[in-house]
Amino acid sequence: MAEKAEAQEKKGGGKKKLLFLIIIGLVLLGGIGGGAYFFLFAKSPPPEEEAPPKPKEPAVGPFLQLDPFIVNLADPTGQRYLRVKITLEFYNNEVYNQANERIPQINDAIIMVLSSKTVEEVLSPEGKMELRMELLRKLNDLLGPHSVKNIYFTQFVVQ
Figure 1 (tube, rainbow, N blue to C red):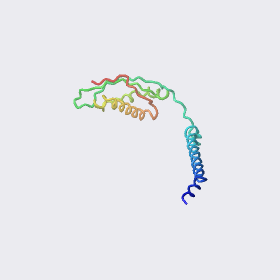
Figure 2: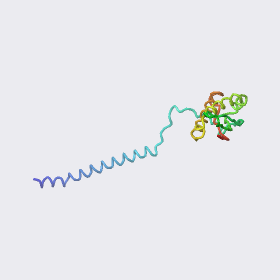
Figure 3: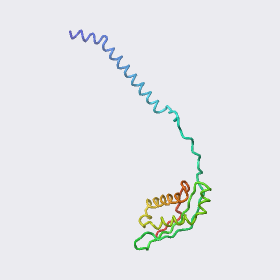
Figure 4: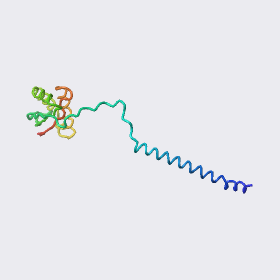
């Protein structure tokens, strides 16, 4: 009886299994190929509600070189001071002209921020970056949002 079962399996059963495995392999291979094409080569359609392109700003805006600032730092001994030259970069000429008319207010805002800092705060690179961001926020509050594009320290001496 066992010999009959083996004979039948050898006749048709083995071929059916082989054909079934080949078909499954081809289906899997096609699925992998289709997935690879979809992820690597197919381009997604652009979003329906894409915002209109923002007008390009000039790469470099107008600059305003301020007079040097010499301030006492917030040091308990009162012996430490900071000498700094600052250059402001504006987004456009209109804001630059407005800033030229408000130099005393700009100087006052900068002096108030600088004199509130300690030696430890201004000596580290992170402290200088934080100082730059604080001055940027303060001046944009004074002149209006998106007025000052960047602040550059052209001289920075702590003594």
